[in-house]
Length: 180
Image (cartoon, rainbow, N blue to C red):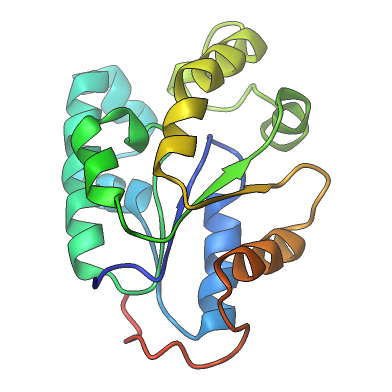
């Protein structure tokens, strides 16, 4: 099966982008983030898409971005936190090396502060983060080949844990094209 070498899923603020870039560097391949693809397509930040066009419109853009990235990208791919909500996206990920990066609410508070410009956490962010995780945790687990906890770990430690979990050789040529 062609497609991404590694797909990272997990909640907002877990470090998918940071860890994804580290993994891509270690594996000598490209990195792609579907949230960045959505922003580029829409020409505005995700928060503005939510406020201007609504969550349904954002999810449609996200679904298209994930579909394109899984078809085109052969490096490390990070998906937005809610991408797994879509059944067709979950089906698309079947058979791919998906890693669920997990963290608990206390870690989320440390990392995200739960007071940033994240549209789904606008009111009572701690409670909303917990509710989001209750709704999504089983979906992350469903699509994942493995789970890597990020709590109390540096991005470098998480990247190494991903490499170990997927049994990917650190620093060895991946045999994959360097794809943006």
